[in-house]
Image (spheres, rainbow, N blue to C red):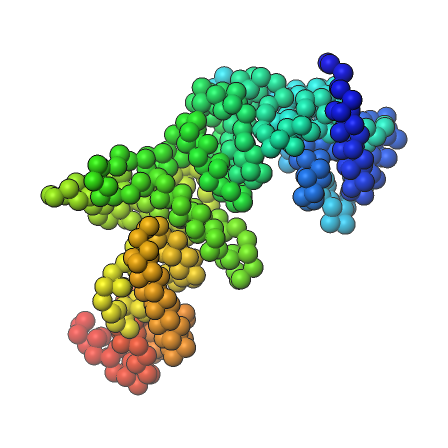
Length: 484
């Protein structure tokens, strides 16, 4: 390996001092414990990168020469709690006083052709372990035991300064060893705002089909991190450009519809990315006004128009229509999210937002009745704050007057929702009689008839507002008599 130039050596010394000054206490304590047993221990990867950029460290990633059994034994003497979920891959983890550490035996991971799980082999040196890291900015380490030294064998420090993602070894070898690294390239581009090295982009494009051997769970985990990053658009554009999206999220590149010469419809792909950007600007988190990434909102924004390719029709006169694309899109989104192993709650919320994202359109063309406003709120349920953000984000027109008109109309709708909510407890939309009261009035036992009666009273509540208990009882009796 060539010797570093003086300027490089000085930069390494400065980096070493910077990282040494910020080493978490937990890492120092474990370094002493591993050194006492003659084992090496080093702070590696993301924590080193983040300390150098001033981002701070949440979890502590360490690498060791000790085999997993020895590492676990040492960890158990230090930690208040340990777990061994990753032990098959050489990783053990523990927690003490709020500090979470992961310790991995020096290793390399290689996918056999057609296998969805990597084969793990253990190494014997820190430099060898770093060579199998995904990118040079994650292939820096601060050895803590038996001695303290900063090591950067693949130029990660220079790439960090340049904002560049480059693989420690040839990109084709790196991505062949672990195809998920291609997804990580897109994820880090979104998280860090870095550019991906041209040779790595070329390899990602040539090897995109290799991602198909990686489990859906691992792909989903990377996609979620990408979507929750500060700049998800950068990562998504890279996935589409390289063809990876064709394998993991094909509905996204499918939005690149041909634009007719008269521009009767906008670029759906660019529109969807812009809606995502605008939704992020509006998000405040699902549980309150604290800014934070909202996965459900971001997925809905990205996927809200994926039903358009299947529903596009060229109408007489050159117009283009996408009738019922929200219904088709919700079904496509559910299918894709299930394939990516998303949980049922996320799938349900995302698809419901997609189904409802067009409901507002038409409000500005004529006054909605109070019952229409109630139905809008009832159908959205707890998703209403997200639906507000998604609907506003969906306006990407360059026509300023039209944009102002839509914004005014939605302001008016929100005002009416707030007004009705104050008058009628709109968020807790329920019929005037509950299930027990319905059974008492009708003299029936629990069953389908109670549900039918409840639904009838709820419809009356939505259409007419609160009836009052006496009127509700009378309406229920009349309805029941008509059913006999």
